[in-house]
Structures are given as structure tokens and as C-alpha cells.
Image (cartoon, rainbow over all chains, first blue to last red; front, side, top):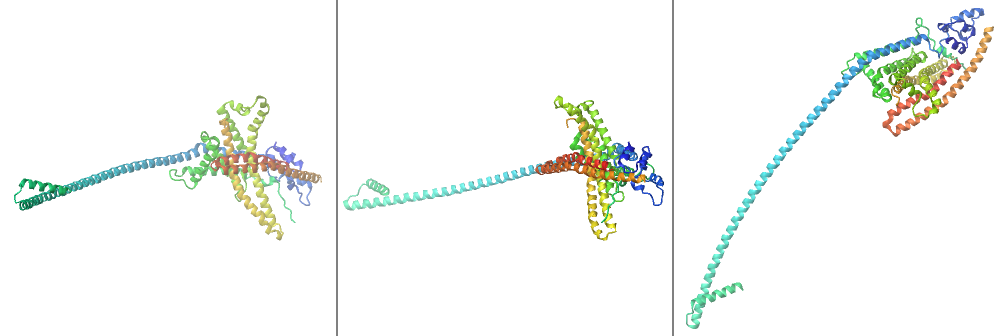
Length: 219
Length: 251
Length: 84
């Protein structure tokens, strides 16, 4: 197989191509480059010099030595990777990821704890605030009550004073009225006595005066 | 003017053996495996309880990239068991691709057919094995006779399904990785040769022109960084898709 | 002398092979080029419309690119095979 490719593909002399056999042989095949006869030499010598000339490998055909070196290297590497290198790396990677995940969980827990504390603090704060507000309200209510009580007391005092004053004024009024009535009755009785010469009935005079005063007062 | 002698592709890929049957590509693939192992070994030894930094950070970033960008969208939670396989696939392919742009080394190990072929055959074996393990013989039935197709059409559908599932998949996986990396390598070689030819070609007038392919070379090197990552990613995600599809036919 | 005629014939064959390889790759690049352009364009549209689904669209886009690109890459391999 190897021989066939090289035979048809190369532009080297056919003689040499068919001369060598076997898989190892093709690396000793020759090319036109190598077949230039040195000046002054016999063409028959060329054949020998051609045999030492290396044309390079076929670009398409795999070379056995490269195949088994490459294959061996890869297989060893893959096995090493599968059973030793990768598991070790993976294990420590997983351990780190787990620890990071654990740290994350811890951080989450700490955060939720802190949040709970904040919530408790806020609840206490609002309780205190409510209590303060209620105390303020109570104080305000007490104040209001006292104020209204004092106001009522003052009002009562004022009204009783006013009542007393009014009663006094009414009493004075009545006294003055009685005085005026008696004075009017005296004046009227005297006037009638002077006019008629006879003293009128005191009861009738006072009734008349009273009546006119009342009507006068109403009129 | 000047003639650019472009070497045949074989010559670009010719590396003499360090010792019999051990050449540069073999060195790169062995080194890729060793470097990846060392990275994950150091990462595993580092203290894992603190925030990761340095090598450990890198390793964890790769693991999470595989899990979140490759396993989860294609296989879901059930596929997390495949992470170590896909992880080693991804890091190995990436470390085999990247030497293509590292000066002095300048050869992606995946630009040779051997490595992509082996890896895709491995994926092929794995996904077929997973299919048989999860569905038994029903795997063949589900993949060759997809439900919901009218009877006579199976004459047409079954061969197509067989070819696309069992033949084209490993083939396209191989060719995609291999050809991408080889094409990138050839492009870099082309522009490097062009620069060299213009600067050292002996024609003084052409020397300043040499800056153009040189800039292209720098740009392509940056592009190859992207390609190296992208091809490792695509190979891995396709492996994940194939395995996931074999494990759960409804997906 | 015989060897030189063989070399000349080989060189002719190589020239023909190189030009046909170029054709093969050029043809193979047309379809995937259009396909990838269309695919990425549509994906960008989808991502712009629904930025929250961008991750999923991107994953699917890369898968689609991988499948489409395979055709171009097979063309590239054919290019190498013919040109060899």
C-alpha cells in the first residue's frame, strides 16, 4: 500500500521506486531533486547516490512511527488523566466549590439572623414608640381634663358670683322699689288729704300706687 | 525577475530521525502529552482550597471550558462523565497544533496523517461502543433505520445513513484536523520562502518589497494561533456530539 | 540518457497534474465558501436578534462550519494527491 502511493505520486525515477520493498523502505525512495548527476561522473553512479537521498514522507499516508508514538503518548496521557490527574483536580475543585457554597449558606444564615434581629429591634422600637405615644396621650388627656375642670370651676365661681351679684341687685332693686312705692304712697296720700281734707284709706292708696308702678314698669 | 523554487510538499514534512523510528513529529506528540500531564499534575498539587492562580487557574479554566462549552451543550448533565476523555483529547490536540507557530519548532504534529487518523479512529470506536452499550443492538436499528421514514425509502436512507455515520464521520474528523493544520503549515512555509527569496534573492530593488510577505507571515502566524485552538475545539465538540448522539438517540 | 527522458516525461506529467490540482482545489473551494459565508451571516443575524441565545447559536455555528469546511478540506487533500 505504501509502495503504491509513492510509486504513482512521486515524479522520481521508476527504477528506484520499484527497487525497494517493505514499509520501512519508502523513506529511502528518491526524488528528481536527488538525481542530478554530479559533473564528470558516470550515470551508473547516480543509482547509488540516489539510494541515499531522502525525499521526505508522503503527505497523506500515515507513518507507522508517528502513529505508534502519537497513539502511545495519547493513550498514556488519557489514562493518566482519567484515573489520576482529573479526579484529583476535580476533587479539590469540588471541595473548594463546596466550601464556597457552605460559606454562602453561612453568609445567608448570618444575614437572615441579622435580619431577624433587625426585625425584633424594630418591633421593640415600635412598641416603645406606641407606649410613648400612649403616655403622651394620657398626659394630654389628664391635662385636658384638669384644664376643663379648672375651667368649669372658674365658670361655676363666676356664675355663682354673678348670681350673688344679680340677687343683690334684685334685692336692692326691690328695696328701692319698696322705698319708691312707700314714698309715692305717702306723696299720694298727702296729696289726697290736702285735696279732700280727709285722709284716704292707706290700703287703697298703696294698692293704686302698686298697680300704676307695675303697669308703668311694664309699659 | 526571480524564480521561486517551491519545494514539493514531501520536503516540507521531511524530518530526519533523531534515533531510528523517532522523529520530530513523534517528539512533538510525546512532548504534548508530557506537558499536558505536567500542567495537570502541578495544578493538582497546588492548594485547591484558595482562589486558583497560575497553572492551577489555567487547568481549572480548561476543565470548566470543556464542561460548559463542550459537554453541557452537546450531552447535557449525563455527559459529565466524559469530561476527562474530552479534556485529554482537547489538551493533547491543542498542544500538538500549537508547535506549528512556535519558532524553531514550526511543525504541528497534527499536520501528519498519523495522529488525526488515530484520534478519529479512537473517537469512532468510542462512539460506536457507547451506542452499543447504551442501546444494545437497537443502536444499529436506530442509526441505520431512523424512525419516521416511509418503508420503501429505507432502500435509499439506510445506505446513506450507514455511510454518513460509520464511514464519513471518522474520515471527515481526520481530514478536517489534518488538512487544516497542513494547509496552515504550507501557507507559513510559502510566505516565509517568499520573504527569504525577496530579501536574499540578490536583487536590491526587491528587498523592500519583502516586507509585504513578511507582514503576511506575521498575520498568518496570528491566524494559526486561532486555528490551532479552533481545530482542537471542533474536534472535541464533534467527538462529544457523536458520543452524545450514540448514547441518546433522540438528541 | 534513458534516465533523462524519463525525467522529462515525469516533468510533463507533473505540470499537467499541478494545473489540474489547482482546478480541483478551486472548484472545491466555491461551495464551502458560499456555504460558510451564508452560515455565519445567518448566525450573526440570529445572535443580533436574540443575544441571550448567542452561546447556543455560536456552538451550532461552529459545528456547521466544521461540516461545511470538511468539503473544502477534502478538496485540499485531493489537491495534494493529484499534485503529488
